[in-house]
Amino acid sequence: RYNVCCICNIMLTSEELHLLAKNPLFNGIRLEELPEALSCLSAEKRSFPKGSLIFAEGDPAETAFFVLKGNVDLVRYTLTGESQLLESFGQAEVFGEAYAIKEKAVYGLNAYAKEDSDILYLHLDELYSRESCGFGVLLLKNLAIALADKTLLLKQKLTIVTQKGLEAKVLEYLDCYSSKSGEAFFIPHTREEMAEYLGCERSALSRLLSEMAKKGLITYHRNRFVLNPKK
Image (cartoon, rainbow, N blue to C red; front, side, top):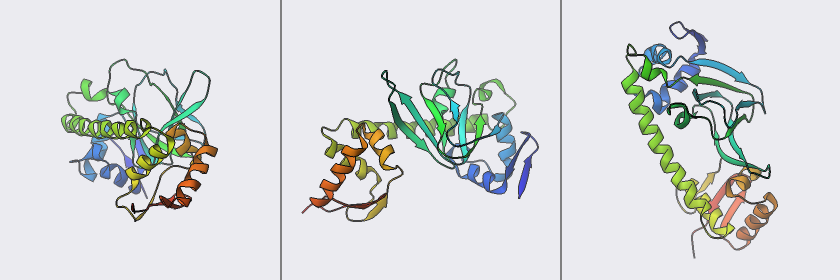
């Protein structure tokens, strides 16, 4: 069940190695080559119980993070102390790389374990300082592509939150997860998280969703939604 990563000195399960192999950061790297690639990144595995802080705003941005198990929320606090959910990451996803790739950067938000989570720390700065790493160029190329994809996702969120009126924001948000009008799909956020994402109160969001359903705009049950075709 367990594979000892002798080169990088950590223990990963076969399932975890396969998760890593499927992530775009490791494109072009075979499963048996992953230990050496992880060695290039001085990888470390750490566990976090539900609700614990992974890093805080202002901490030195020394690593990127790969979610081996669990879920992580990225949160910022307003001047009045209110929390805002910026993004969530689940199993097999990478976060924090935009900070870690920049020299002497600090994290601009807080990361919390949404549930019991196992996280792989990836030291991206090692790619610049270890000329002997055979995967450095490939990892940097994959990282650049991943950051470009996340830039597009950020643009998507800006499109959502800059809509005029909460109903327009909700429709734009749902459209991002919908593959085709009239077909069911699932959203990754709870009502509380969705409200934080859209910058509104949960009660206002729940009220609006009910109104939109009565108007025939949407059909929904919990996290399952359908965007009804326009008549």
